[in-house]
Image 1 (cartoon, rainbow, N blue to C red):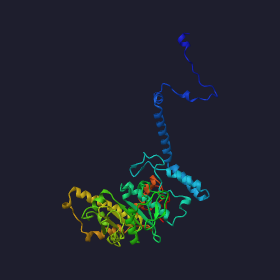
Image 2 (tube, rainbow, N blue to C red; image 1 turned 90 degrees about the vertical axis):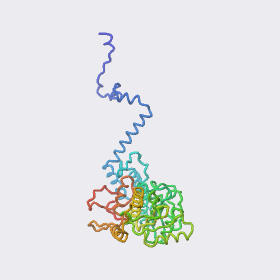
Image 3 (cartoon, one colour; image 1 turned 180 degrees about the horizontal axis):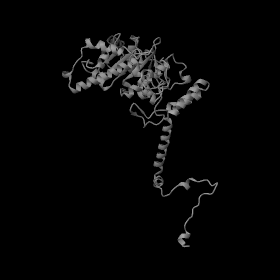
Image 4 (cartoon, rainbow, N blue to C red; image 1 turned 60 degrees about the horizontal axis):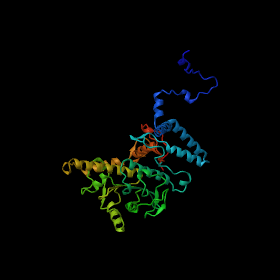
Length: 403
């Protein structure tokens, strides 16, 4: 036997009972092994974390996981004797989110980065007025929608809702929170003069200057439950035009009678509030604050959103028309002929053969809530729409009427 042959190493299969070790399966000449071995420790750790997150995401996006989790929550709710266990399950459920919402990718968002809207559980909501928790969820959801549509402007615009006509209690987001951070628990409840009734879950204060036009409107319009004030480039531009919002689009006609007020940024004096109230009148649902954007009013949150959406759309159309050709090329619609008909159709509601008739803005608002529910738990009590030919995802609380 040659010396070379004598130096060869003969490997034998592991004997019975011998446990195969990890290193026994490694091929030191494998390119993938060499690439991993030569990788820097920091980069290797990053790749490992990415793989772990990928596996977790696959589990959370599994319909089976969601169904099982919702089953556990329902089972715990039926027991009713372990609020801590129910809270833990709800917190886990709030982490669940889809990878995209209405074409908006949420891939960069790691779990837990999006604050749930419906974040009031157990003892926290026991002292609320009837229907207040649902109102908080819907208002916080509307803040999120305004943010998704890029209408938010830090502290220069606000959305409020009246939760008690008897006591004139109003919910508003505190100054210092972005619209994307609004949730049921961090909304502040104030009275009609701005005094805090319920601080909410933060120690932030209310912007009294921003709240003043809302207070003036609520105090003289008992029919109004929700107010939306936005200062987008389009609404601010139109509010700065002497001609105001022109009847050149269907959306402009839907708005009905539009009120105008020369707003200067705050209502410090009682006389100023009276002048705003006179300008608004008893029935207008849209108020243009000169050089300061647009305010929409509604008997419901859905109706207020309906009017602010169409006001924003109408302002965008007008700005685009002005940029394209100016006043000389405008075709102005006959208000007396077209406005009553268009507004009546928009306000008539929608009946789809069932017993329920959808009121102004409700169908559109429901679709937006389903979109938000794919991203973060809203707490909104979605209605069933499957009877109307729509294919929808499984809702958080199907079939229950709005409160």
